[in-house]
Length: 132
Image (cartoon, rainbow, N blue to C red; front, side, top):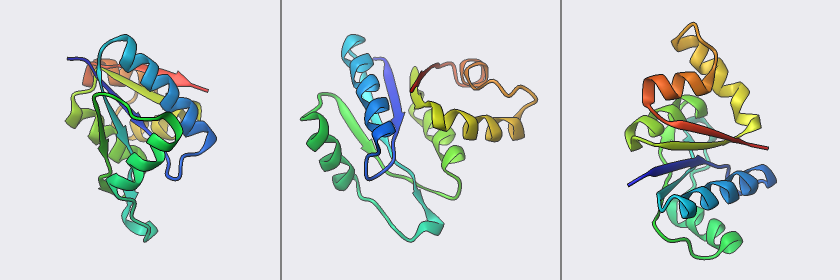
């Protein structure tokens, strides 16, 4: 089954709502499972639970079929997102334009190629959809 991963902020920002809406459409169109991802930063002191994330998403979009909510801890948002994409063996990653620049910086540290799409496609074998 196709796996779609979408990182979001909590509480859901306008950009996160747009990115999530696109991810939901892709998951429905492709009969895919969806992982809604929020990273709890160790240094923030604020810890979001899966049930809080689920409630926020359902308040905005209603009940979603075949969805998983993931709220791992991480030191750096972008690195934690890449780790989750790899762990989920994502086929599609839906990210907002604001995340593209930050992910590009992390990928530059890992490789000479700053292209997120190429990195994710070649290293993690997934398609990237940018919203925004």
